[in-house]
Length: 580
Ligand SMILES: Nc1ncnc2c1ncn2[C@@H]1O[C@H](COP(=O)(O)OP(=O)(O)O)[C@@H](O)[C@H]1O
Ligand SMILES: C=C(OP(=O)(O)O)C(=O)O
Ligand SMILES: [K+]
Ligand SMILES: [Mg+2]
Image (cartoon, rainbow, N blue to C red; front, top):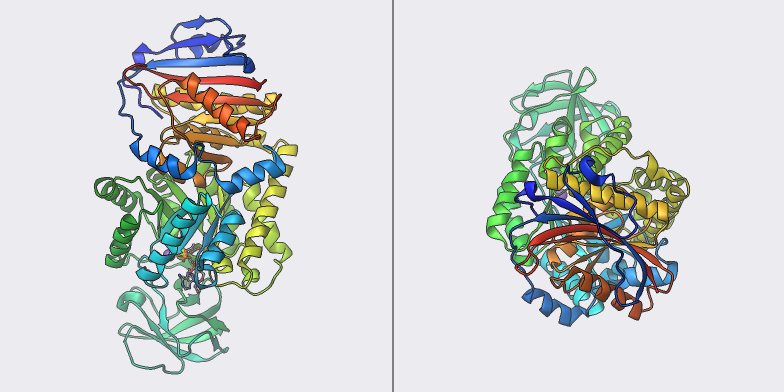
């Protein structure tokens, strides 16, 4: 959203038959003028508008890069998948929940990536824990080339490895069984080859603060041990809960039913993570997901770093996967551009039965603070091996959609699974079904919306979007169009989870790629002139010319005009247009 520098100059304008005269005083305490009904060129049957004008300083217009992109992507940067979905299912049938796929050896060929893109992948995630940078570079370039040549709009996310204590060797190439009563040595000492009943940890401080009698839990419950002896940093443990040790298994220690919280001096961003971030900058990725964020400091640090190092704006996503991050949830959400509910590692640090409630809380906090949220890990885990999900998995996916998460993520299902494309189609179909149910039951009415904005301009933008979403639902419009430079207005609309799809028209490619993670938003890249009315007519004409808008369709248009020399006023408006 545009930054209003002088809110005292705010005034309102109402055009057409607008019932909202009580905007006066209540919204911004400034005079409201009723203007005339206007109808442009006979193309639009009816138009109702509410406008808020604010005096602003002239902003800098960007556009050369856009012109270059325009040549490549056509006049209207409408991605082929959304376009196909609109043609097939109509506006209301367009999917709202976004889909993230982890790319791994099972889906890294150009053909596989294209199939995932066609299947609705909005964001490709690269987990920097695995494989080398050369491999990741190759995948990123393939995705970018598919976007350019085939008209997809898939954003790229890298996910840092982070500093986590895990197994580096457990005596076998894959999984190894821990039998009831067996005695194991857990050590940080490096040794060559594998030793039976010995587990090597990656960090010498792994047993700091641990006492005899503590419980050692593997991967949140894969196996459990009791510490029976401590010798230096080595722990001798007896298996009390037989199970499996997997490669890179994670440890947690418990005492009296509570996690033993320890303050390791491990940085959230390690030297390797910084090198991976440099790599991400040089490859122009759209998002960086930071593993094991514990407070907002590391997020601010990275954001500041990126703002000085990269001209491209990249979203910083914080992964909520530690007990500590739950204690500082709000400050982390406020600092970040989005959140991932990383249920895999979260389940190592909190009892599994607490995860559903925590997930719901994180999703709610994110919507309140207007940050996109991804629900991740084990959504369709059984599909790594089987061609159909369990009923419980479908119920879990449905629950995340019912909670109005912005996005769902596949991990091993796509990275190493046998049925990655099918898993993606299960996510797609399950989310569409749940979204339809939500609309039929008017579920979005139950969403509480706390006031977010503090400054007057922010409150105006928020109210415009809240009202626009309510109008769109009550009037049953076919689509919402929002003109947005940095995506703020689009996200404020998305926050209300309205029934119609939100077409976010932007002339900024970074904004377009960032909006890929937001619920219900279909980002379009367009050339925007300074004349907003001309922009609106042009966009409508373009969409009409591709037979995607037809006579009688009604759209609600929200615009947020950045001031320029010729139009030195910011202008935020809601208009309802019926296509003639
Ligand atoms: N780039 C990759 N190369 C090889 N294997 C990968 C890659 N990305 C993911 N995987 C595999 O997919 C599994 C699930 O992915 P993910 O959840 O991202 O990782 P992890 O299980 O390590 O947290 C990983 O355990 C790993 O086996
Ligand atoms: C998504 C997660 O992180 P990663 O796969 O990188 O461990 C998780 O822990 O759930
Ligand atoms: K990771
Ligand atoms: Mg994790």
